[in-house]
Image (cartoon, rainbow, N blue to C red; front, side):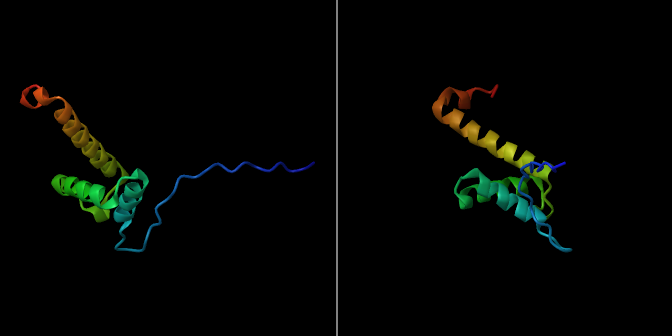
Length: 95
């Protein structure tokens, strides 16, 4: 009997871990920044501002924390877009 070649399943990119004193969080953040396609300096500044506001050390950033930070970033961006195109929204206390 011939052996059938197994199909390899595609793997998602992994962040390489480093030795003690790691910067895995920074690697994770930089990887996500690169994947966005947004100019790196711009989004990095915004995400780091949100990290600081939430009291999260980027060196110990977890994937769940990063999800929350990116969600906050998207809410802020969408809020500013809505404000720009709907000026009444800014003066409406329900928003």
